[in-house]
Length: 631
Image: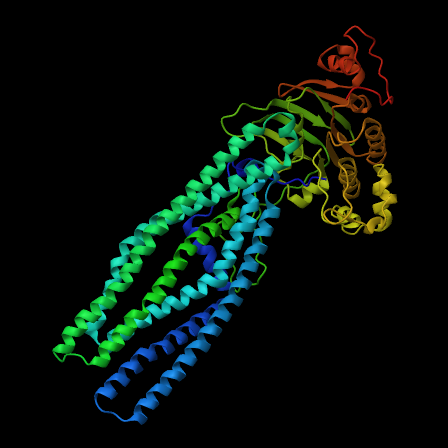
């Protein structure tokens, strides 16, 4: 069973295969601040511990300068020992405070990234199916794996280190100014690296976004090629796919070379700039010492302080590159909430005053549409896959009465499956309307829509878990008797031969079902979901003709009284239907019963005769129930 998703016309997914959205820098910052506010006390503790650790580290150079001045002034050993002991205590205190600051930072990072993952999962499940199809699964997969891993690493390691380094940098500069204001001016030599930093920051964010997009495109290409390997081989497309893969790899290499170039300019420049204060304090301090303006201990302390600047500066710069990379990754993760048609994920952690994120819809949503009955109306529908493309459906008008069995037939490319997607609410029409009980199908809440309409396609998926788990996706409260009945209804006789029955584990490491069995499992979920309308888009195409006929008859018995719209390539399905809709070139060419359309001698009659291998003048008497025919 394929769950349907909503996307109103105003909220349609990006067209033309556009990638999923990326949050703006301002929206990314707001999202990061919200995450910090959720765990504000832990964040404040991190700042406090880092400040104390940096403060404890300031004592060493100052005490060493005092020791130098004491020795030069002829002070006693006891004084020197006392200063050395204080220096040792301060170093130990700095070690402990730094350790606990990192510990608190790691705990904060793990809790925060858990919230990021939960929010990403909620948003992913709320995505319209059409959006994922157009963007490609590679982009979504990359955001959920590599991008979140980058954010996690940053929150766990980089952020605590940058906090500590930033506090140390400020305290060291303040300590030099305290020792000697004149020597403190030498710290301004660090400003020599600012032009390189500004040059880097202006270019880094878009460069890392481009790198992430190229990585997603490569992942999508590789996944599609691997999934369709047999088709590629059968159609002789190996060279074309290889060329496309090499082009994608070249784009990835180009974007990564770009970010490498940015780093190669930034890091050496700032390394040199971090040495300028040390050189300046030695030159200026020597002059001032010769004039008696400062003591030797002050020069030693200032030199050590400024020499220590290199460690936090290097740490900040090293992490700055990673912060830019993870910032771009977080923008891609957060951008998922900006996808049109998604319902904002509710925060899992209570807040005193929750605020809607930049990617949410208005705080007071419109009242959800409620169908008045089960009647489905398609009125003047036009639809195209993306802007600038020709319409796939052109002015389709159709009414499906409650309890009716409607077959939709036509040649390949006629728009049958597209019509089924619109009826199921996966896509919304470009113009016109598709309603159920007077309510736009695409505007229905997903929970309401799943109770109204279910679409079953040739695509199927077996989830990792037991047979019972796979079936209860459609009906969580169903008992074993109902599960067995659903399997029996779709002719899944193989289920009774499983070694552990409903407890048999399916998927990797368990029992692997073939395509036909997987399709029957999906059909059993339809039976359990019990919607009033079922759309079967060649849902039995993977079954052999005899099994397909048996399954269709079983489903017909189970779904009696419900609306069934069957998009079929085996025309016996159309023969059994109440009415047949014939699609040609995106238009509804004919509509009527099987007997009426065969007698009319139009497009359906040509399909029927061709399917039975007869000429147009051959008798048109149907072979109902024969189950024999050309697929």
